[in-house]
Image (tube, rainbow, N blue to C red; front, side, top):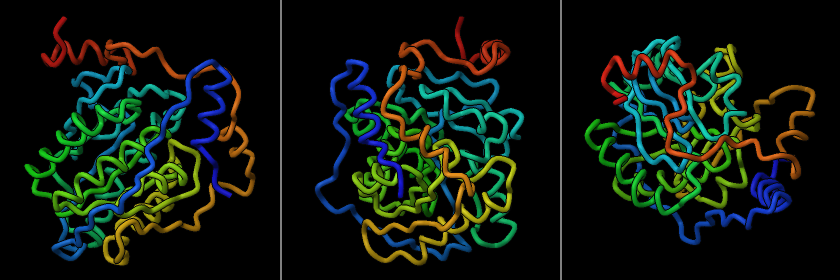
Length: 292
């Protein structure tokens, strides 16, 4: 049985004195745009919401940061960093970015002939934006314009934390309403089903591993390939598919993921860039991206 992330989050933060958070529950069907070219010829746009940035860029801040980063698709993994308000989900991604930022996986799928190519830049955001207004009015429109400029055929959206899953539902609905086919690859089933994106592929893994297990290239390929195949197989607005992949024979990870009590593990929400490493700040200063 999948984890009830909305209920767990509501109960947990209520125990800490926070008011109930109002999750998005879409009450209308999503728009629907069929891909205009076969997947094998399609140019793929990628959105990763785990707060990825490249060395030399400015890290995200944690106060509902609605900015985006454009990361060259040929950036080596060693130059990828992450800054996200829910740092606890980044442990494996910081060792293997492919868990949440499937660049190398997409490159392999180009080589296989599954997809035609990848946009020159990955678009990255810090999807843990609690303000739904900021997602709708700032982040989603900026991403729409960026994907139009990239002239992508379809977009794969990869969320990380619970609120990231909500954000990608909002973003996907806007992109699709403007003629760009989308696929959300998620693990918070209840949030995705409430947000009703045009298409979704769901894998029952701990958050922070939506695109596969760390250092397991076969698993990552299987998951991302299946998600992209959904552009061909899904025919109805709001359709989703649940993959059979299992995290492990031991299901104890669900107990931690579904905790409803405990301390607030989110990082302080202010507007200071939260660099993963001190050297990243120096690199951003040297590149001119960060002004001292």
